Image (tube, rainbow, N blue to C red; front, side):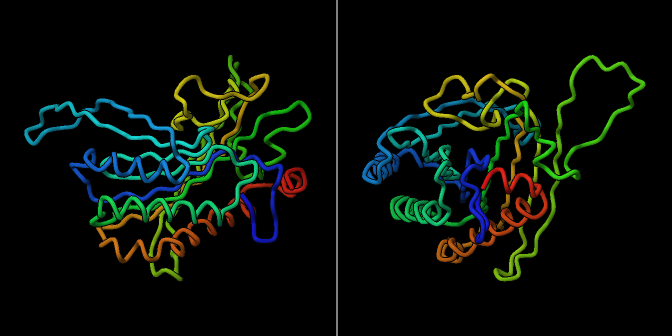
Length: 273
């Protein structure tokens, strides 16, 4: 992640996800061959289908089993993935050592344009942008030195004989007034830890599917997860798609502002720049 006047070339950014949700396309499967052919030409040649089951409550309170499919299109090295189901399209980048926001957003808009030409989205219900930073604990550098005191969590009574090490879990959410867009958005910050060295939060799918990737020596990892999104009541796609770049720019700007000016310390900026 980068501020306009600062680039953290050694920063902890490990994943960026961007998504639009749309009114459900029940017959989405029939469009997938054409979508696959188009994305293959855009250098996403690897293809997979994920299937699963879920449950939901029926109209009379009965439990109904549902099945779902998700189609995945990946770059040759699996670092960039496009995930599609009947109600959303997500673009995720999990190799962020040279991440550039402008290239990222332009690529996503190109993907959306191609997808829309094939399936003809009717209306959009959500847009969102998510940044994941993963901070592995080191002998000479703790996450406590990198995140500001406000995000260190609470201390428990020393009079209790605790038998395990504490793990931080923080979740905060606030509304945002995006004046330039004349829209309201939702900002969510999560900070949590994994004691086994996982490089990504467990809800992130790493392809090809298999064991989660871990940092060397499997240290304690602190995840800083910033999610900024806008919910719509089924807005006509033209009103959103033509403004995607400016919408995501405002979502991105708020994430940067929080990360640089609320979350990380001056020491972190010096270490990661």
